[in-house]
Image: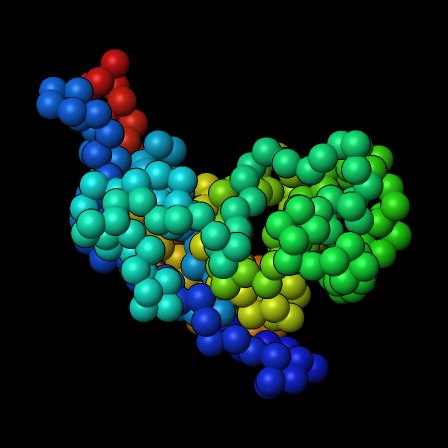
Length: 285
C-alpha cells in the first residue's frame, strides 16, 4: 500500500509481517474431532491490508484468534516479523499489544466518554500517564474526524462513529497488527462506505498491518491490497488475489472496469466454496 503524497516517507512502517506456515487446528478428539483449519499457509505483508473471505464457519475466525493468542493451534507455525508466535513446543501465542482485535460487537464502556474509552488502555496498563494518554487520544481522534464527539458517550453517537472510536482505541498502543473480524457487518451501506474510506486514511497514516475478515466481496476488493479466498471447512487459501487498483483509493474506483473484473473473479471463487459448504451442511443435517 503506497501512502498518499502528503504523508512523509519517514512515517511508513516496515513491521508487522505475519507468516502462517502449515497451520492446522483440530477441535475435539477421536470420532468427534473437527478439522477447522488444515495446513493453511499465508503471508500477510507488513503495512498492507489483507482481506480474508470465505463461507460462514469455514475457519477464518479460528485463524484470526490463533494470531491474536486466543486459541491454540494443533500444528504448524505463525510468525510475526520472523519471531515465533506459536508453533512446535508453543501451541498458543501470547496476547500482546502488538496485535489488537476489533470484533463484530462493540466493546466500548458505556459509562465512559469516547475520549476516556480511547485513553483507557495505556492508562490501565501503566504505559502512559493520564496526561500523555489523553493528549495522544485527542490527537488520534482529531485525525479520524472524531474531535467533536470526544466528550460524548458511546450511546450518544452513531454506530459508524462508535466503530471508528473502537479502531482509534485499538491504535493507541501503536500495534504492529490490527485484526478485524467483520467490524462493519451491522452497518448500512452508506455508513459502511464512509467507514471504508476512513479506515484507508487511518492505514495510510499509521501503516499498521491489517488482517480483515469479511463476507462482503465489494468491501474486500475496495479495501484490500490482497484478498485471500478461503476454502469451505477446513480452512486454507483457495486463491490469493492481488488487488492492483493503486493508492490512494476512493470510491471512484467502484466504477472502474478493473474493479468489476476483480469482483467477478472473486465472486466466482467464493460462490464455488459457498456451494460446497451448503452441500456439506445438507449432508450433515
